[in-house]
Length: 215
Image (tube, rainbow, N blue to C red):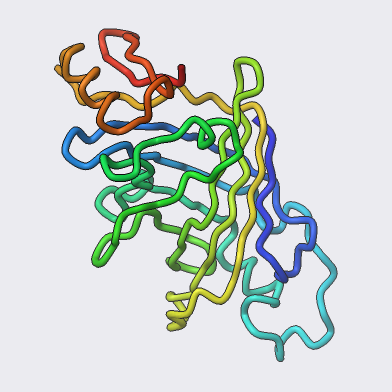
C-alpha cells in the first residue's frame, strides 16, 4: 500500500505519508452495510518543514511545534472501541450501487450520529472528523482510495468543522462486507438483496464465513 494524507493549509503542503491503511466492510443485518477504516500517518516530523520565524504567533493549525507535540494522525472507526461505529454506506432505503465500487460515486455515511460518530481521530489531540466523499475503485486484484473530509479541533475547544483533509492510496485489499458469525447462506443472500442493487454484490464464503463481495 502507498498513500498520502493532506491536511489543507497546515505546514506540510505535500502532506504526510500513510504508514497503515485498512479498509474493511461488514454487514449489520438490521441496519445495513458498514465500512470500517483504520488510517495511521507517518510521524509529522518525518519530513520537517522550515519553522516560521513568527511560529509563536501562529494558530495551532499552522504551527509546526504544535503538530510535533502530537507526533502522528490516527483516523479510525476501530482503534478506539466504543468511540465510533463505522460508515453506514448502504441501507434498505439507499442500497449500494455499482458506481460506488468503481469510484464514480462516493460511499457516504448515511447515519445520523448523535452521541457516536462514524469515525474518531487523534490529530492535534482527540478531535472530531466527518467523512464527506470516500471513493473506492478496483484495479485488477487491488483497490485504490480517494477520500475527503472535514475536521474540528475539539480537543482545543473548537466545534466547527473548519479544516479539511484529503487522502489517496493505492494497493489496498478490500474483500467485501463480512456477515456476522454463524450467519447462514440464506441470511447472507437476504442481506445482499436488501442492501445492494441487483448485480452489485454476490454471496461468497471464505474461511467459514459468508461475505457479500463485489460482483
